[in-house]
Image 1 (cartoon, one colour):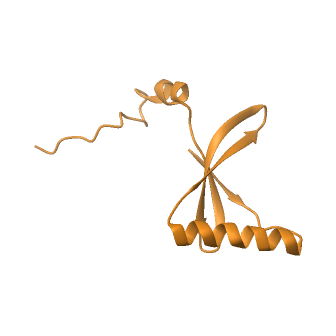
Image 2 (cartoon, rainbow, N blue to C red; image 1 turned 180 degrees about the horizontal axis):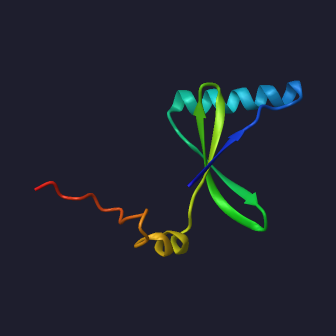
Length: 83
């Protein structure tokens, strides 16, 4: 899972839009969904407001998750029973 910090906007008009988006997401307690392009791949990403900035978290697709399960550092998503 990768997390990227989305930088602040450079122009005054862009700063107002950025601040409005951060405030709206914070007040509503919601997340934004975005399409993120890194290298030649497009991925879905989640935008989260944190301390006045947006944090962009790239999501893994099903095929990537399935290939990771079973490796030493990644386990199944089901919780372990404590009984």
